[in-house]
Image (cartoon, rainbow, N blue to C red; front, side, top):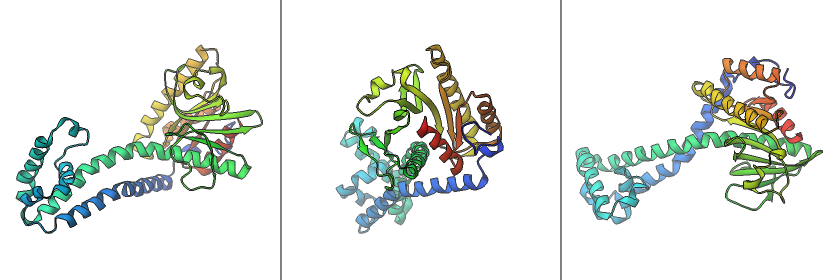
Length: 318
């Protein structure tokens, strides 16, 4: 049994089950639909606005749909900074000549499909970022739940804000867009920072716990106070088993770098942890071995609620 997580009883207990992998993929699919829905609505609006036209060339006579056609032509928002109006019109004309006209009477559908194809790439890019964010949000929601049960007051700092506010732990969506959390335990006040660059490590770290308070908090100076650092962790929220081993290798390398860097700075007992959603058998054995040896202080499978809450309680009490 892990010293800091009673629900980790063996390497097998860390492995993500088929049911949790399935649930994870379904959750991502639902999120993709949510993110992509505005683009589908845009396409339907376009079709309504050009339904009265008779041929593909008529689309050029409707200035209101020009931005839609620019996207359908494959021009990104970034590219528009380098293209003038004539360049943009040329791209739209090529779209019409090479793709919309050959589609015949289906030119409106063809323009719609090409718009959605381009926006599909944008959704894919945003989802790669969102998957990581979903993992962090799941961890934060578990922290909130543990705090709520224990009656602990928590403050939060949003990514786009410089002002701390009290968290309504029962509020839906309160786990989104978080930069840092603050609370107090029997040993003093704590600041938990997400995705911070730690100078001693010379790299970004996913989970950073410090002994500090709101009044003293400064994101640029706190990370330089090695004496206040309590624990650092790696968070891998992706659910795809195909990428699990690679995520562990990346995370393990980062954790080794943290321990080595802080040991060289005079802090040889720096605590480290690993939080992962996709944990396969081989990496589970490595993680469990590190927990048994004390190399890794704690860990949890993000999809295992018992392990996750135990991890959060440990984190809150550090």
